[in-house]
Amino acid sequence: MPGGRLTQQERQQIALGLADGLAYAEIARRLERPTSTVTREVMRNGGPTGYRADLAHRATERRAHRRRPASSRGQAAEPQPYGRDADAVRDYEETLATVFMTSGLPKMMARVMACLYTTDSGSLTAAELAQRLQVSPASVSKAITFLADLDLVRRQRDEGRRERYVVDDELWYQGMLRSARDNDQFVQAARQGVAILGAGTPAATRLENSARFLDFVTESLLRAAEQAREVLYSGLDTPPAEPTRAHE
Image 1 (tube, rainbow, N blue to C red):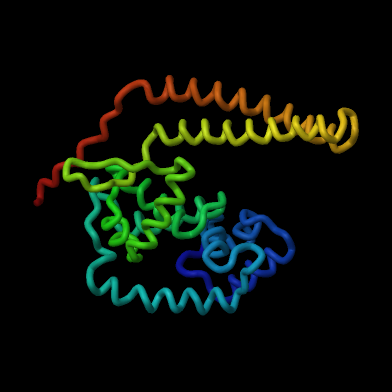
Image 2: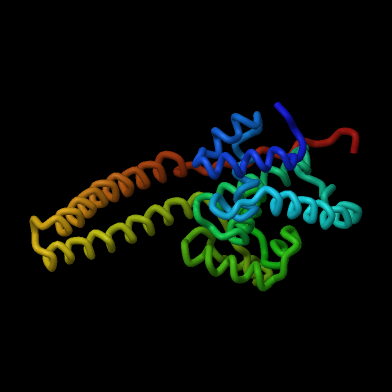
């Protein structure tokens, strides 16, 4: 399996695959590359409908030139706990951000989420996020507001009264509740439409079927969320102690 950066020829093959309507996994298989590599490449360069091989190749070269000064300052060599490989962690963080983008999050919001999820504490201040992501505090603030409105992060004050942004197990449960509320709003609106359009008409039947489907799914979702919360998060797990380095 080839490694390293994508070549211009590989990018042209990606563009052809997208034009043919191939899935990322199939394009990756033909290139003998990981699916995550193709997904990240496409999402960083215009998405499936806007990807152009020549522009993507030039953009990658520009990013590589911008990274070199940062590496010379030692940013890329930031020490990692638990003996982790710093380059592998950085690459994984980028992959995770791509997954979040694929699910619908804008790029900066996805980067903030990935940064928080790959931090052992699960929480960072705005200044820490700005430093780690090398972006402006205003960009972080906008991303946090967006994510907090979706219940994907929560705010809390630390002992120094600084605001920290947190991701934890409870957020997934809260996210399920939010999804259920959103579904219920559509169900109510759909059934209102049935009464207006006339029961038994094609449009009303379509709305009623959608409402019944979402009713069933939402009930199952809430039940599963409650069970998962009780089974998975009832105990207090403690993280493994960082190994002592005898040579230090």
